[in-house]
Image (cartoon, rainbow, N blue to C red; front, side):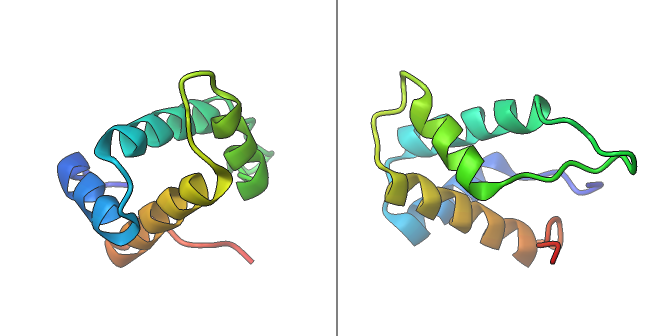
Length: 92
């Protein structure tokens, strides 16, 4: 990813799309980054992230007081933002 992500713009986009609290959005994104950073790369240097495992990991964090639907909505809105910016996509 060569383009920097504007964190404020990302959080505002997610908040607008989901009506989630900014504090919860930041918390979910923080735990998402920790999960991704700990994921193992395959032989091609790529990391395959299972969405269900990611949501379960985030919900298992003691400081996350939310539900599965809210976390999924935040992650989906983040992905929409990243795809709109051309920074991410789904692999079939």
